[in-house]
Image (cartoon, rainbow, N blue to C red):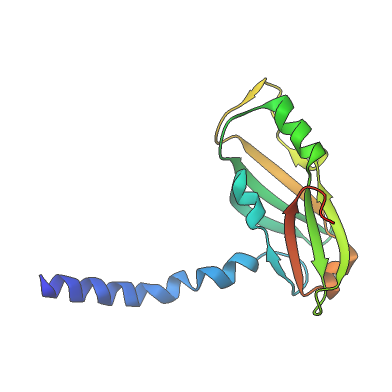
Length: 145
C-alpha cells in the first residue's frame, strides 16, 4: 500500500510542471498587450472552450458553450439589457477604457426558440487601443459605474 502511495505521489510531482500554475494562466493567454485578463464572469453562463486573438483585426474571440438551456429571446434580451463589459485599467487601477459585448457581439445564436445546454457560441470583442497600455482587464456583467 505504501509503495503505491509513493509511486502515485511521485507521478503527481512529475506531472505538476506540465499542468503549470492554474491561477496564473487563467488571466493570461492569447490576449493583446501585457495586461492580465480576468474573464471569470463568463463562467456564470458559459464554459470557455478557447480564446484567440487576431492581431490584424484587433479582435479577441472566445468560443463558448452555454452551461444551461434558455429561451433564445430571453437570452438575447438579457445580453442587451445587461451586456458583458470589459474594464481596462492601468497600473494605478485608473480606468482607461470600456468595451462591451451585447447580443450583436455573439455569433451562433440559434433561431430555435430554446437554446440547449452546450449550445456553441462565439463572442467577439473589438479590443480598444488602450489595451496596449493596460495592466489589467476585468470582465463585469451589466453596466458598471
